[in-house]
Image (cartoon, rainbow, N blue to C red; front, side):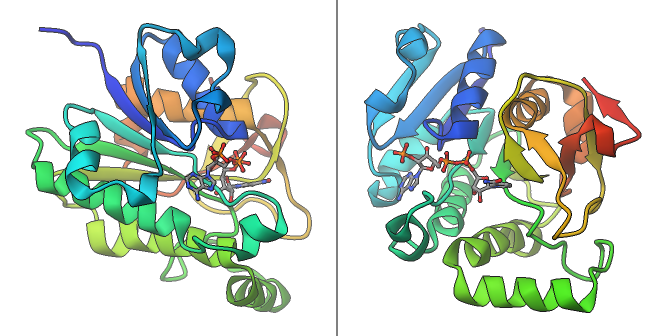
Amino acid sequence: MSTRQTVLLVGGTGRTGRRVLRQLLERGVGVRAIVRAGGGIPPDIAGDPNLAVIEASLLSLRDEELQQHLRGCDAVISCLGHLVSLKGVFGPPRDLVTRATMRLCRGIDALQPSAPVRFILMSSVSVNRPGGLDTRRGPFERAFLRMLRGAVPPARDNQRAADFLLEEIGSANAFVQWVVVRPDSLVEGAVSEYGLHEGLVNALFAPGSTNMANVAHFMCELVTNPKTWADWKGRLPVITNAEASSSTNP
Ligand SMILES: NC(=O)c1ccc[n+]([C@@H]2O[C@H](COP(=O)([O-])OP(=O)(O)OC[C@H]3O[C@@H](n4cnc5c(N)ncnc54)[C@H](OP(=O)(O)O)[C@@H]3O)[C@@H](O)[C@H]2O)c1
């Protein structure tokens, strides 16, 4: 029996998603990538034998089709994000990340896998852990974030997707376990030392930076390194480049 892991990746044509895709393949992980257009996959990896590209509109797939793609997967990674344009930010689907997260988790649930599937969600430091678990932001930052979630759909969407995992999937689900990865400002750059933090480390108006390659590296570690998964499952780690951290990876 093959022990190769299989990941279903959504958002794999994005800035971070492409890096996740490449690093997964470099580790020998099998990837099924649901993409809107196959042309978004870098040509040098498009023919990789460990990659299956599924061209489809994720939110329009029928439940049975989605379950077929999820069947046999050890993990699901979502690097979905609203495109940075007027249409991307304010146009439909305003709840892209939340709807995709809900559909994928419910699809896993319907399959009742024998071992829990790992769901890894790319999120943001603008997302709060509820119940005051994050370092309390100042009154101005809190007011600004409230305004942002009210006025800017992607900010609200990211929060709702994380809330769904925390509140509806929870920590004792037999079929889905999850990690919400919260990078600070995304920047270019190679894999370097990075820090993982239980809560927020930078003020909203004095952000730190996180190499997209480091986000990808951490997501791959969550898939392939059982200790990393055990350390972070059911949590919302903040990931920043090492200059802002004390404990570092890789
Ligand atoms: N920018 C930052 O500094 C920052 C910081 C922290 C967290 N984040 C969060 O990180 C996430 C990913 O960011 P990124 O910059 O790596 O993403 P990105 O480059 O904007 O890529 C977005 C991905 O989502 C897909 N997508 C967009 N709309 C879609 C739709 N309607 N249906 C299906 N797929 C769709 C895109 O597919 P196509 O290629 O087909 O368009 C692409 O694969 C976002 O949620 C963002 O909020 C960003």
